[in-house]
Length: 166
Image (cartoon, rainbow, N blue to C red):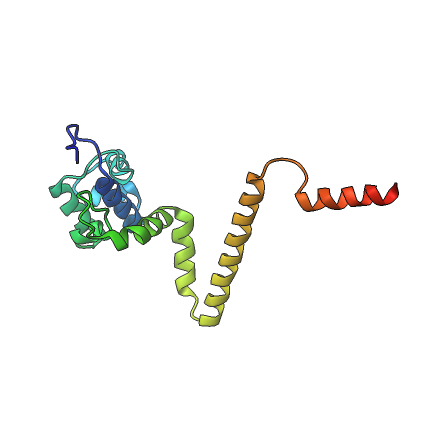
């Protein structure tokens, strides 16, 4: 494996940044508030950390973890294994999906509203609705990806109709 010579963000750095963003949003905290609570970090710097543009140093990560009320280990849960030892492999499949989902304000709002619903039956119906909407959306995407023109079944049926008129 090649060594990184430039201090650019790695997949682990991006993962840590996504976890910072996820926890900040779950708490309803702005980037400015987090920066102030973490010792005067600018909101622009918090933004760069969250987007994985800049790496977070150990002392800064310590301050950020205290401001967000989570242990430092929280930021590494499900992180990709850069060495390829296979450790953490199972969790890297699911966690990035959750992290990216929780990185949007819509998903945080949805989650907050969902956990307030006490009726398990209502929650199950919401999950089923979401699954149906997702299936419908993926079906529309597949349909849109097909080449333009008439679907084969309609073309064949139309040809049969023309033959019947002759």
